[in-house]
Length: 163
Image 1 (spheres, rainbow, N blue to C red):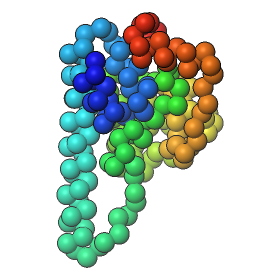
Image 2 (cartoon, one colour; image 1 turned 30 degrees about the vertical axis):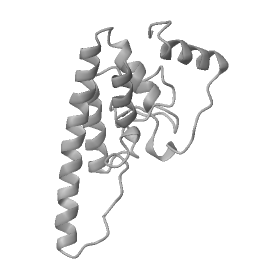
Image 3 (tube, rainbow, N blue to C red; image 1 turned 120 degrees about the vertical axis):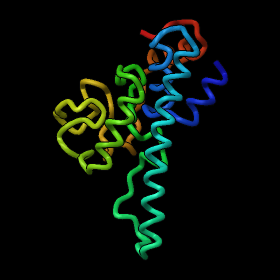
Image 4 (tube, rainbow, N blue to C red; image 1 turned 90 degrees about the vertical axis):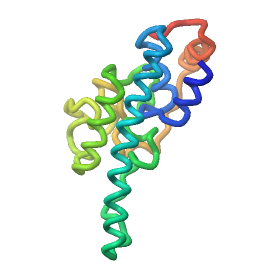
């Protein structure tokens, strides 16, 4: 569990708590959780390498300023950040990471659909379907209730199972 925690600290597409909850909600099999996280991380690393290769080409051609700065390649916790750790996408991490990165690359992250689940967004709040926060709201931290903090502590100490 400690090794998995360290991995989630380094790569948490939904934010640490939501990614941790997602991995534990999938079942008690630790190898399965690690495989899912590793699969998504390898996909993210490959896409990040593609971005780095394109930037090297642009710099060699004299273009020293990137056309846009997307947080997905330098801050993996912002790929599909979920402020409510109990409300996150239920699909495999790799699927959501791929969809979100594609939305960033296409420039559609600030559109009317969620970058993680492609459902229609109704307002500027987190997606009602999957809980992912719009990228222009990423600087806003939501305060959790005392009961939610207590539930997180129980999940973290493994005295309860994810729901």
